[in-house]
Length: 318
Image (tube, rainbow, N blue to C red; front, side, top):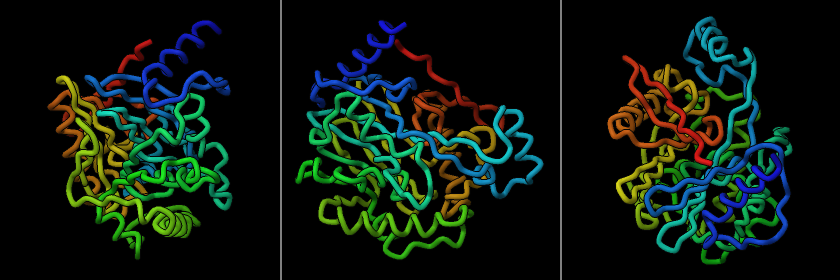
């Protein structure tokens, strides 16, 4: 068993060998936290930032409590609170090493010690922060930018790091609107605080785009809106293969109930429209999907199931 684990770790490390400094000791964990795959000539590494425990009401605040409880029971999930996965992605293309989202980092006021694992897990994969040339942010919620604010991280990043996000996203967080969200107490203040700090610390490195921007060959970031005004997805395409990192456009419940509103959506009606359109497109194209809050490593395909959808998990490639 130990030999199997060592072999799997070695394969994962070698998939991004050009983007890493390998050979140094790596802390071992007893949970899977990274998964490597190829999209044509593009190297992709899904990395777990840990889990984020949240009330189950956050899944669907517009659904009747009894209906939501029934879905949770059918999915073998606890009725009151459960762990949301937190996934980030590292992409290697055209000589660039691109980090897509950065995890939670650390916010002691929210008492979330099981998240904020990204830096440790990048190190375990042999990826030096100094090798990252670009960061793409799907949006500026703290579980996507907080890792860049963790102690000591900025000092280890390259001074010429480029941070790509939609211009509408940066503009929104100057004076954010929380009138249509349904978040637990404390979260709006924490989100405002984190976004302000991020803009203060990384403002000079931002490279905002209007609707889409090609970060590297086959790596296209596209604004969708909905979840936040500048929410974006990242489309990978190479050698006839495709994969989309959907950020927070798709949640676990969003396949079977795409019209259910997530509590963190700043425009839930638009977010539902974006979700349905994206899932229809992925199903029609038979395109692979990865998303922030789907169970790690979250690599799946989308099938149409009547008026809803079905998540078809990809087989792990050992």
